[in-house]
Length: 290
Ligand SMILES: NC(=O)c1ccc[n+]([C@@H]2O[C@H](COP(=O)([O-])OP(=O)(O)OC[C@H]3O[C@@H](n4cnc5c(N)ncnc54)[C@H](OP(=O)(O)O)[C@@H]3O)[C@@H](O)[C@H]2O)c1
Image (cartoon, protein in one colour):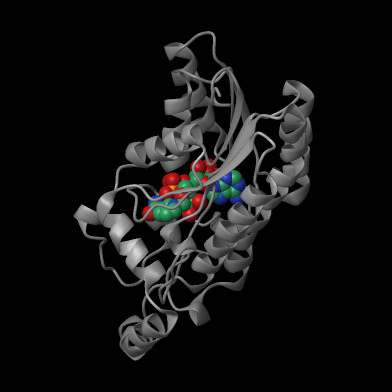
């Protein structure tokens, strides 16, 4: 069966940077309509112009939206359905992290992260799925994380959001078996994007270069998994090994290892700079929204 990407209406959240922008670029030669969603409208417009210059028959629909705003999110889904009848492929990619001791995290920022990483993909999928199911054709790609499959100290709430997305993906995939709608999750390890600048990293420790992947490669793996109707993909052999080692280790062993690390992390992080407050949108100044 043909992939729903081909000649389809594809909506990508978080298309203004990183993995989402890479996915949009790779889908531009295949989709009929690309709906680009994020807060930074200038970036979305620049990407739309680039994609349309490369393929004039492509329709690019720029939809600025702060996905933490439920009213705006509902309005987005309604407007997209009104204009395009249905979305064939939904790519729930927008997200942010928060690195550090949980007790030091800004509570508003934690709530914002849960809104973007958990509530937004849940509601967007709920609002766009019925039309896919009725058409008997469609795909949802949820960009989870290696932290959807395992966990580590300093990523407590972020890993919690991605565990949610992983469980949602697997359960929804089972519910939709045989309907023509496929649900897939992309679970990358570290990727060279704006993610860390937004998440903050009070440890100051850099991810080893050999573990960090290029967003284009991660996007390619996600798209190939949708085309193949796969349940899950972890791009790159080394990240796959590292994530699977965590996922398949007995939980008691991880608790033992990470528990031993706790006091050391606490000593190291006392007095470290905190993550950017949510009032900045959790990142570069030009971002709108909260
Ligand atoms: N990079 C990694 O190491 C890594 C690893 C595993 C999983 N992931 C996941 O990959 C996904 C993409 O992240 P990335 O690495 O590409 O990071 P990124 O470069 O920071 O991109 C994040 C995207 O999410 C959008 N976004 C954030 N908050 C939003 C909001 N309130 N409303 C609408 N859009 C919002 C951002 O757009 P605006 O700021 O313009 O709104 C941006 O386009 C995330 O779900 C992340 O958890 C990343």
